[in-house]
Length: 371
Image (cartoon, rainbow, N blue to C red; front, top):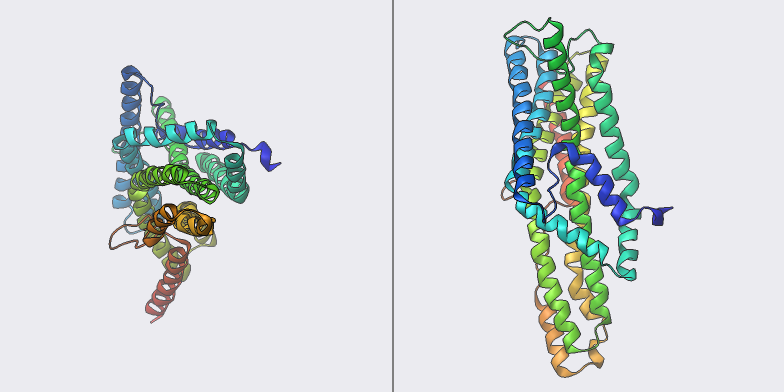
C-alpha cells in the first residue's frame, strides 16, 4: 500500500494542496512571459486578500464593544494576514524556491533503488498525518464558505463595508471574493506541508549520504561523499532560509490564538464559541508541528554523518583515509531552523516546551480573571 504512494505522487499531492496560493514556484526553465504573468497573479492575490482584510478591521472597529464578535473577527483577520504575508515571502523568494524544488524533483527522478527505499520509509512515517491535515483543512474551508447558509450572517467572514451590499450583483461579487480568499487561506495553512516536504526530503538525502559513506572503501569515494555533504548542507540551509519567516509568523499567530482561546475558556461565552477557538488552536498547533517534526529529524540526520563515518570500517583503511575520516569527526554543526531571540531551535523538545508554556499561561490567566 505504502509503496504505491511514490515520492512523485507525494510531490503532486502537495502541489495540489498549495497551488491556489501561488507559492509553489514555476519550473526553473519557465520563460519570462510565464514568470511575469505568475508575478501579476501573486500581486492580484495579495490585493484580493487586502480588500477583505480592511473590511474585517473595520468590523472590529465598529463592533469593538462586542467581545465575542470582535475576538472571532480578530482570529480570522490574522488568518487572512498570514495569507498576505506568506504570498509576499514566496514572491520575494521565488528564484530560491525554484532552485530547491527543481533539485528535489531531479534528485527523486534520478534516485537509485536504495535511495527510493529510504524515501518510501519517510513517506510511510508521515503520509497519514500530513494527508489527514490537508483533507481536514479543505473540509473546514468548504464548511466555512457555506457559513451564510447555516448561520444568520451575510458573508463567510465578518466584515463591514462603507457602502450598501444588498444589491444582488454586488453581493455575488463580494461573496465569491470571500470564498476565494477562504480557500486561499486554507491552502496557505497547507504551506506548512510544502515546507515539511522539503525538510523531510533534505533529511532523507542526509540518510542516503550516510549509507554512501558507510560503503566508502577508498579516498576518492570519501572525497566524493564530503563534496556531497557540503552541497547538501548548502541546500538544507537554503531550505531553512526560505521558511524561517513563515515559521516565525506561524509561531506568532499560534501564540496570539492560544492566548485568546485561554481567555474564552475562562469567561462566560456560548459553547460553540469555545469550540471554534479550540478548533483554531488545534489548526495553528498542527501547522507548527508540520514544520517541527521534519525539522527535528533534519537535526538528527545532519549530525548522523560523522556517526556513519565512524561506523564504516575505517580501521582497516590506509592511514591517509583514517586522517580524512578523523577530520569529518572533529566538529559538525547541525542544520537547525532557528530564529534569533525567539525560536532557539525548532525541534520536538521546543514544541513540547511551547505547549507547556501555553498551559502555564492558561493557568495564570485563569487565576488573574478569577481574582
